[in-house]
Image 1 (cartoon, helix red, strand yellow):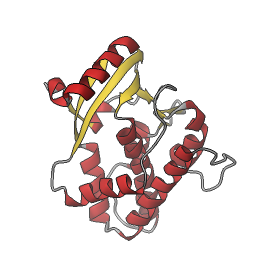
Image 2 (image 1 turned 90 degrees about the vertical axis):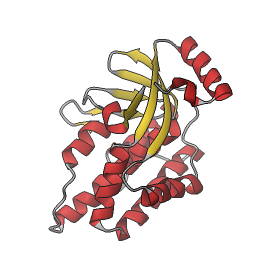
Image 3 (image 1 turned 180 degrees about the vertical axis):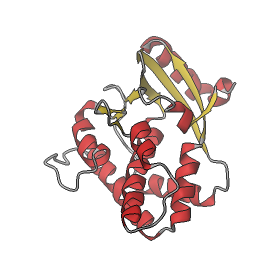
Image 4 (image 1 turned 120 degrees about the vertical axis):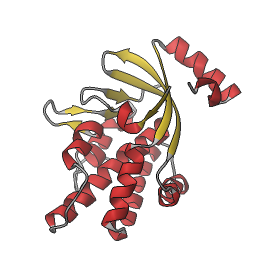
Length: 208
């Protein structure tokens, strides 16, 4: 089914979680820079690929395929929120709704509910570093994936610091409206079968 990132997070109650058996965050500087370069080169359309989810419980989807891209989007939104908030505090007029950035992609402030959970070993770090955007916290960087999360954040921060406001807002809209294809299954067995088939045959079979 074709959708967008915004429609994927269409409910403030919807949550996403990377199950413990999935890979932790693995994108390095090369992939993050390519993500940014793709946004710079995009005009009005941006395709972010295929996502496979297992419907674990009501309003909660386990990310089976696409966890690297989705994690990167959350880091992107977190840094974008911080940069746009800083510019707003300096008197610039921001067209993007900053509350929606938080409520839809980071944290439901009414319920204090995390919208996106990474793998269990990294999640407390992810909360402090990305979701709550704490400048200082006590979480140790004791895994490569935590190091990659922080590095991705720093790359975005450096890029956003010198970007124009119009570019920042354009990139935000591009990611929110990025076209994706999604497939949602009911159990782990079906998810495993589809994941294997998808990697053998390609994602075109699931574009409807």
